[in-house]
Image (tube, rainbow, N blue to C red; front, side, top):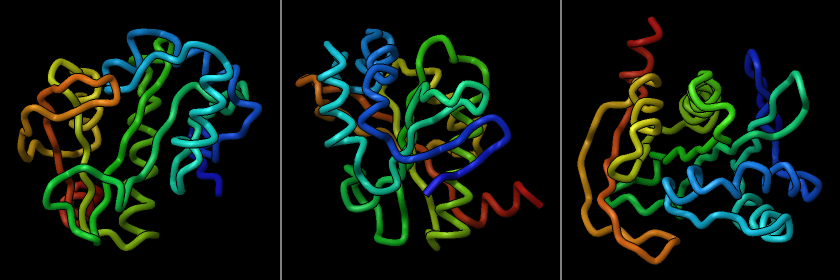
Amino acid sequence: MTIETKRLLLRPWKDEDAEDLYLYARDPRVGPMAGWPVHTSPADSLQAIRSVLSQPETYAVVLKETGKPVGSVGILFEISRIDGMTDREAEIGYWIGVPYWGQGLIPEAVEALIFRCFRQLDRCAVWCGCYDGNDKSRRVQEKCGFCFHHTEYDQPTLLGDRRTEHFSYLTKEQWEAARA
């Protein structure tokens, strides 16, 4: 499945995206802020594509003008780690390469996934989380209409450390009211 926005195509990751993924995932300003390790080689990125990024509803964020992936967005259901998330809710996660920070691309992609959650997947609410200090991620959530919900302390990451994580929440009713 491919989702189209004004500037982006959101499509499944492919093995041939490994070099492009590595280009951005090797930057220590990207993965560690989101709780995952820096990619150490294109082979490492290929492994990520074949495991984590091959999950249903996980999309490469592809610039229409270049046809190249520059980030990732996804909708999580059962594998979410949010306490209290119901089976009618979902979580959205995202990241984008440093050269594309501040251009509004991730809010554009997240808005498309919010639409998918509420209009196509019949979800009643969507969650987002970010670790303490990840102000760019928090700002994306605010731009997309999410409101702070709660904080969880001492949360484990894929890096083997533990962090404070802040969660925000958007109901279908809030989303529809903002669009009216």
